[in-house]
Image (cartoon, rainbow, N blue to C red; front, side):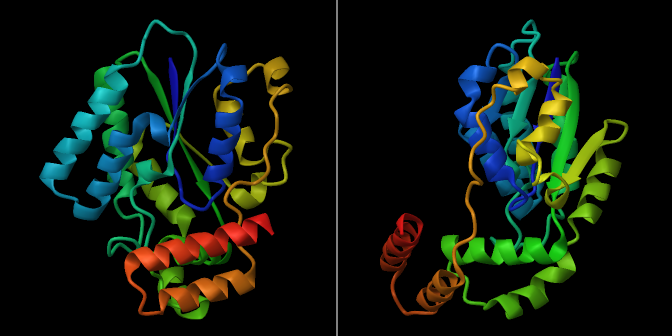
Length: 261
């Protein structure tokens, strides 16, 4: 039983991968099992918490949730399992006081170890999607403006984030932590142009039959960045003195109007 862990990173096409898998889940079901974030919410929350605290308590909670999730797998089912959830790599940098994916190597080592304990015959494969530093930093900043009270403009954020934006180096550290298990990776710039975009390398890893692959309905890019003027307005909102609920409501309305317009 092959188990592919697509564990990140944030803002590297993961939302597009998950949207395509969700839209085609029924089509792919005869040949592929799919777990997305809603399917493993306790496990992703445990990974995020561990990335923030990095202590024995949260390490134990992570192991428990991983055992719960992987122990529920039917080992007699011959279909591979594809898991796609970027929170398996921890919190997005510059959330909860974090600035990097420093926890990712240990997280992936713990997850693959837990999978082996729960399913000794499983064949785990870790896959990481990456992105060039400048493009990744810009995309992360836009996401922070939408989802948090980010008050830094792009230039200020870039100065803080670029030193931590080498996702290829993080992937190297993950590869060392999970060895001898294989690590597969691809940069968004390398796969974004493919007919199925960033989903294509994952379908290769699960050896999806060509006839089934040809029937997949492509999806538009998920969670694209908003126009510059909208991002500027979000920054202004984040710098306001509005309370949290008012800010959230007004940002949500602005984003919805932009997407509909």
